[in-house]
Image (cartoon, rainbow, N blue to C red; front, side, top):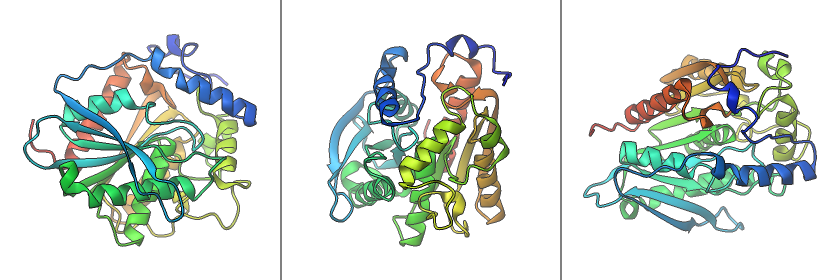
Length: 319
């Protein structure tokens, strides 16, 4: 199939990591490929000093502690907004280093504290392990707000791809378990629906980086069963949630040539219908993960929109 991809993105297609998920060997190869991604992407040197430290949050019941990385503006004198960040990777890829540069940039731009979660990956640790790790990290952040220098009234959750889906699930858990209270959810190109039955998911079988075959493997690994079954939890696939009312305000992004496009749009529509304040941004000519090409104008616009959305959602008033 031919796709009208933004001309600025086309030269990078052969340089971006190929992700083909079919079996255990291909998964190991994809993990190795993603581990080398940092060599392709430019480093970021913060304008303002940022303190970075690795620590751990108590894990879910009978589970190991959850590794987290804390990013904080150095020399701050008052509490600032906090953001729990959940990396992408189709539930089967990724670690704390995957979005390290991007998070440095966000802290530098916004002056907030970000806690990045190194949740357990499928298929070794299928649902509910990954989302329970993320929720445990959120509970820890809320409990340690004073120590972390976070204003608990301005605590949000954010993620990209599978991290966007996990962010939506954490928001559902926080609502249904009575906390911690979230003021905002940023759902970047989110993976939300295991039923795999939208037009974009049916048609986009060969799109760059992410496509239907990868999505099938992703959900099968995460659920530990064939996707699309009758008893899938909404905390695994948030699109399954019958009630989206009472959730925090949301910002949702989608890419044109991404099999996840239509489920992101549908989730934003359902949030709006449930009375949740939601903003949806759809980017033409893009594909899943194309924002890694930071020099493209469309990618710069995507990052500027993300910064602006977080500024509004976390109620940041300082420059």
